[in-house]
Length: 278
Image (cartoon, rainbow, N blue to C red; front, side, top):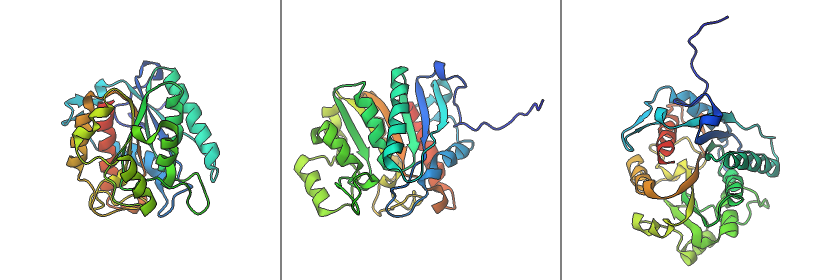
């Protein structure tokens, strides 16, 4: 029998036993409604591979993810071209995670899949809010005649939990009608203190990596100039450390677009930080 040692196929620091975990890292490799540059289906595996090159210790949170009981369950298997079935598969598995009294950290994959994660959370929790870091509003009712797309995921979630339970950070792109909704419902937050009203909420955190400036995060489907720096994003996340974050996802890495792998390395480090936040 081969003795190894062999490199792990899991994200660095993952426990080997699901039952002992408090957080489940799940790959969500679906990108069939991408409206610009595809390839986010390859994000979860690329992040795992890149994680070998990062430290398990977070300077920001003063935590080591080896001390956090998280389990990397691997990637879900999705059918190509069937968004409804992909959402159903995701919801079923995310619901099982919460039935097992664990938290989700999803890694995508396109942003549409966040809808299924929130739907699962809503079967277990009341008083749910969404905090979204994103360059785009994601508030379209449809795109090219399709209702289920990553460009409308937050609108679908708002229909479930109400705009009063939505906070959006980093927005800088969208149609006028979308920004009309943003202004009407005051969902755009530019100061951390504006999130304080969500302290009594059960919060699902969703991070579209294009919230970061493309000078750092070029490996996304729709890069938008004028984004946050990594340190600015970390300031927001550190502010949330005393909030009740019940689950999270990190979406939209298209690793093959950025051949320097800077985007993938940044995404892997962000996974580490969100694990500490959960």
